[in-house]
Length: 330
Ligand code: NDP
Image (cartoon, rainbow, N blue to C red; front, side, top):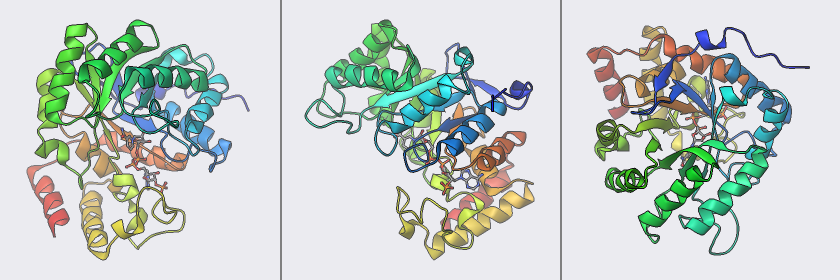
């Protein structure tokens, strides 16, 4: 059936400025790491993307290796762009990345100019677009001069393959160096993509979150739900239809009795706030201006809807924040 996006989609979402740039991103973005490979029916992928766009999620995050097999998530989203989202390219922010292993041999991973530019070209083909909005170096490469990796991002932007450059999972010190190089090249770093959630706070310990604010670089927090742990999914153990049950990136032993106790305590705090646990987890990531957008994943459209509800309440009292910390450390 022909898809017509909800007319009121922009009233359902809030948009936050990405660092010091001119670009605004939705407070919630959708990532296609899981559930967009050949192991998932196309109809579900379509339904997830439709419900996202209907609720004002304009930003779709991909990478060369998302699948399985690697590349298939970009192909699936390319198909959705040609069908459902045809005519809406200028309302969408599409990201891709290169850094992890994509093809055999010395040119298929890490941070060389050879790999980044070839991989970006492959991504554009799979997506069926002339350009992506954001192209990332997916991880810091200790063996390639940072000037070369950043030079490749600069070239990708200058050649029109991407509109903006980003980096992912670089620590605070490497981020400072990368941002300085990109500034010198005249292609400012738009955004940093680190992992961040109530259970994983390395960006605070490392100083990265403050560094990004200081440098005027935007930020998109990946796995804000700790791959689904910070939702109502695991309160009674591991359900069959979950990532942990499928032996994917979330190992079953991550769902220990201690973790479940913490999740139950967090769920009580969320209930008292009038939120689901997923909504509170997203609100927590977005609670100050330090993070521009929370990058969620979803295996069904209902999850997207639940997550979007987070934006109704992003503020926390000091007592709530203390209770969350106590629930996690118990
Ligand atoms: P999340 O932490 O948001 O976990 C998503 C999972 O949580 C879903 O697949 C689903 O699990 C569950 N879930 C989501 N919403 C709900 C809900 N409302 N109620 C119950 N369960 C829910 O993020 P991801 O781990 O999926 O990562 C998000 C994105 O971040 C990726 O798609 C990717 O774009 C990016 N990313 C980037 C990385 C990088 O190196 N830059 C690394 C990893 C991710 P289930 O499938 O079990 O139903």
